[in-house]
Image (tube, rainbow, N blue to C red; front, top):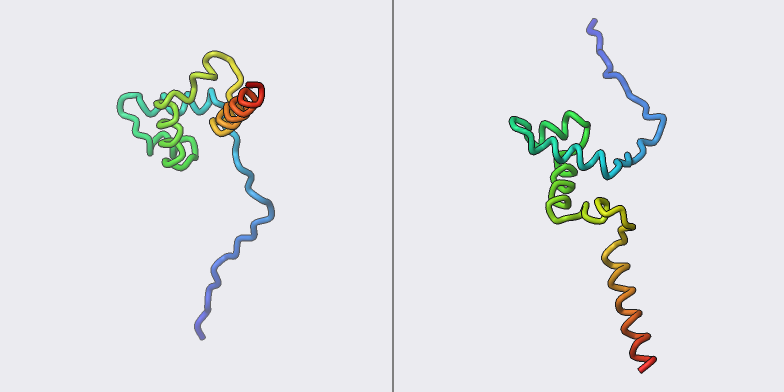
Length: 96
């Protein structure tokens, strides 16, 4: 008689929520990737984040995404800014 072993079944009972990272935590994580001997992959694993996410944060930081935060001004999406400029142009045309 042979015994068959069943593999354990894992039941997921809760929904995993998307984590929210503060801009300051993101900055600290990105800055850690520039330290000697630390790679992006290592830092990502250490913090439980996908390396691609850290690479994205790093690229955004290099493009100046933190400038608004440094000046403590409200940052709005570029699309919202473009829409506002278009609206201003339309209103200026109406006014003459």
